[in-house]
Image 1 (cartoon, one colour):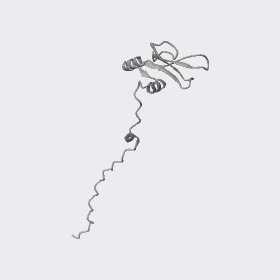
Image 2: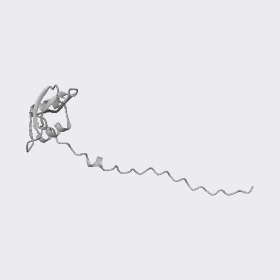
Image 3: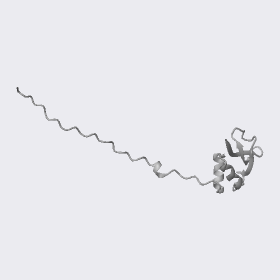
Image 4: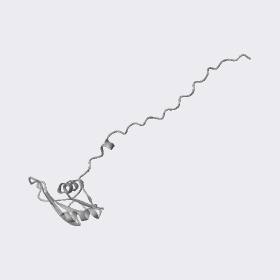
Length: 115
C-alpha cells in the first residue's frame, strides 16, 4: 500500500517535515518514492507547500494520506472537505412499534353441565 505521509527533517527540537509518497512498509524517515511538498509547523502561520498536481495524481493511483497529511491537503483545498456525519445517523432510530399480538378471544366460562 502506498501512503502520503510526513518525513521528519530538521535539527533536534526543530522539526520540519517533507510530504512524501512512500510504501507503507518503509520507516518514517526511510526510503520514499517521491517528495511532493514540505511543511514547517514552527513558523507563524505554518508553512505548507504541496505540489497539487502530483498529490492528486498519487491520490488517483490509490495512495492513502495519513491523518496529518489529509488535514494539510484539506487546508490547501486539494482534498475534499470531510463531511460531518449525517444528522440521521446520529439520531437514534425511531423505535418501531412491536407487533402487538392479537388478544385471545375471551373464553366463555366453562359451566358444568348436568347430564
